[in-house]
Image (cartoon, rainbow, N blue to C red; front, side, top):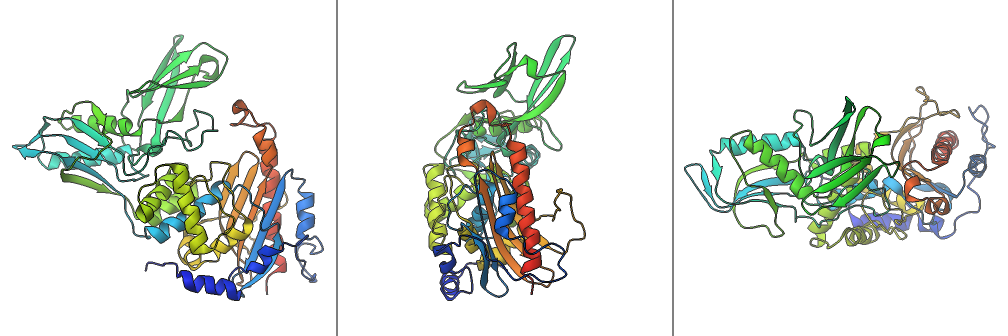
Length: 497
């Protein structure tokens, strides 16, 4: 069954207090609400949520909101209207957006088109690889698509080989403040392959470096020429990138390599990347194509083969589990395109999602600059996040897609026998750590909650060289996660029954 937001019913429930009430957001309490202690609890209930925040010794800001979905009442809040970066918790909002606009059963389609007549297996025209916004397309899928094209009887192509990614607006990166070499910040296009990442592998033999750049997946690993790597004798930076027109040109510092290893690097020319891999796969079937050419306009033609993605719910489940940035961006941009027409930039696409969130979920302080949360200029509040989690679509469709979050003790060790069940989305940036979702208490009470922590000034002080491994970043993130877990354990004790 396809669950849809009944906006009027939900907003009426908000006003009536059946969902997250406006009154709590309008006047945040100076300290969290404190229930009466109950004898026999596993932890001292005299330790208020405010005391837990203080003892976390976490620099920056900490905000949270927790709401009783079973009884339709607010429970505790600390700074519920303070705008803060959501980090990857933003992907939960993007999932709601896509589910509402595209529907849970939506599938993305990649097509192969012929612009001319096919006579005796020879295409007298151009062959076109047309992306449809599928964020999950892999090299193995390209191999399967090429095999299906061969089965149609195609033997040769007289014209050009065109690749089109115009279903979505091209963006060279998701966030301009990230280091250039991180694989989680690739280009965005309507044609994506291997999450727009290329595999760089190196090995030192006899004093010389062997370097490969390939598009590997489970069954295939074709090398590509559109991404090149040069080992340079220097101390730093570790990587440099240069746009060489038809190629991604990389260099790497020799001293950082050791004797061998590998890593994924971002692809900045996704259409050429996908086109080169598809060209290789068709060549393995005896169909020779000219070098791929990027076209900004999709030419008319007949579809000779197509590949459909898994349903949107499966894509979102993996996106939420692995926190895949490019999936969030492509899904969010696809939803914006379906709702309003293709936006001309990622920022405007995110703005359209923010407008949807305000109109549909009454999220009053949410202002996004992307769909993944990678950009630290995005802002939301714990009140807005809980309002979103309290929506019918979130409870019925999003919640089953969220991953289980284990409850941990004061030493951050997993408590396998703890009765609290948590389904949530985590989020992490340098000096930003977030958690939002649902918790089922031992007595069956259901909670919606959100916790946002951030030290924005400390994050802003980082140099580009520090952004991948900032000094003090790991310790700060651990303190935030301990705080999150302490709040979850508290709520499981004081709000049941």
